Length: 340
Image (cartoon, rainbow, N blue to C red; front, side, top):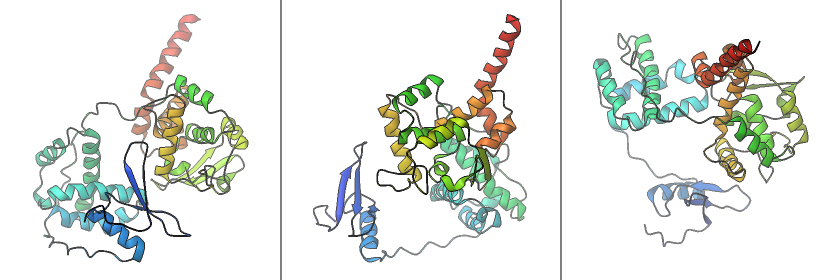
């Protein structure tokens, strides 16, 4: 359908990256985001649903062979181990497996060998993080298959990770932290966000949900969205001063210019704006999660203590974040002894 057709109630604008965003406006209701481009099948599906509540009929799914990877993944989705995962983890795994099945869904899972798994991994060599996430997810699928005696082994066991070129998301240096704090002083919304990230070490999906209702006797009590872990974090005095200075919302500390809580993605976009305003580039909210761990390591806190604050699931993840900081601590001890 040509884009010259007039669709009522449509609002269009370009974001800071030059991409066109489409929304449907209905009086008295929130804007409904629509997939683009205007007039595309995806747009028409979203527009029809937003305006009438109806959906475009989808073609019936093809017959799934019992011995295929698609069949196995569908069985995994019905398992207790998958259903026990946090919502965001289930969504992430489904997205990873959906892309995998588009290409390899017809493979017979019972005869899949480690060598074949390595070849599949190597197809993602240009995107090592994606390859590693796929292997991690497939390992759980085949763990399920082994536990339910659908096959005798896990062909992903022993498959090594691909090395990443960048070492992951960059942490913040102390100089960069000071630069942000100098540009966004205490008493600004940007500083509230920064303080929550730096002094709790949490993911942005948890940061946007925190509020005064989570406080009790100088501690924050909440459940992590991704892992479901029950968290108890002391409110350090630096964070206490920042929160008391505000501005903060009623139900959540962080609110938009319209007084509404942020979504995780919306907060990520806003935080990038604050970073650019401070004259910094390539720095993210997740990078502060790493910096929080490194700061604790520099104060000689143990890996277990750091994991308790950030809620990391494995100690190896904490060790990866704090490796450089721990080397500095050891070097400082050498210097102190030499200076005696």
